[in-house]
Image (cartoon, rainbow, N blue to C red; front, side, top):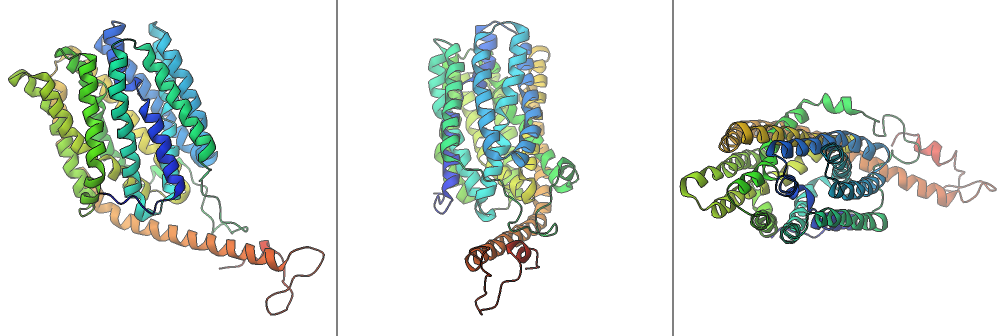
Length: 454
């Protein structure tokens, strides 16, 4: 089992907030079913709506990352959660094409703004050597909540799709309560005591992220896998419906993903730590392609329920070896003062995949045939193997440099905080001159002391 001890208290409240909101994440997995089976729209329109939702998520990934760095993690989370609840309720009660399109975009805009802030908050409070298991535990909470949501949502959808939207909104508001009362602001501040410009972290911008070649290569490799994975919530549900499976059957098969991750995520994460990031991610990319190609067997052997269950098992194993290592690697590649922006760019790539995947997948289902998407997934999965191997190799020296810088800044902050405390003790008021431990007067104030080299 994965060791769960030694992580900060704040992390565990982030974990709780993640579990709460994911337990009610009913809408996204059933949106394609809702649009095609309940409202009677085409697969192409369902793909278009999913793409609009992803466009909103893409815009919000950048905005959310910048806000997390500038305004703070906590206010970004609170604002995004409230806005997400409002748009979900509205999306569940409208039926016209223009309103569905607009609200799908706004829902993506609101919902995805939470991801950069959450990712940055974990990086803020968890030391670099523990981030892999912290992201693994948080991802475990995501999938545990997802499994619960799928079992409940499948039953609810059989009676009323509208309740899915209201339930999802309620989960967002419950998460607001947790964040408001239990999560402090974790954004790193400039070193205390008036540190000089060369001692405090630089302000930074998105341009700095775009000039980071190692991270750009990382984003490219993430995009390959994300395009494949996007089929799980858009194209694959439609394929399952075309093969005669009901919403309830889809809910059970989809819940298998969350159940497997709930059981296997922690022990597998411990086992994978003996291998390099590059080798784990390369192997997982190959398995991801294989997993989404398994539905090709329906036309050969029949038994769609069993085939799609097997598909979920294979790409779930790939997911276990992909997402937490990617999240930790992305966080470790980010300088301290740019964590929100780096998380935002990582989220943006997933959102771009969410646009490309549904658009191309929906078109392929309508105009080419159901076999096109599984074959394309297999090709992309194989293509990701050399990409991840190279990125993993190049990331090692880069991470070593960044960790050394984090250690230096932490030591600087600790030293300056100690100076502040000593100065406050030996200089209790402005009415009498302060003295040092040797009996001499203190020259200047804490601000003057802090400006001296440490």
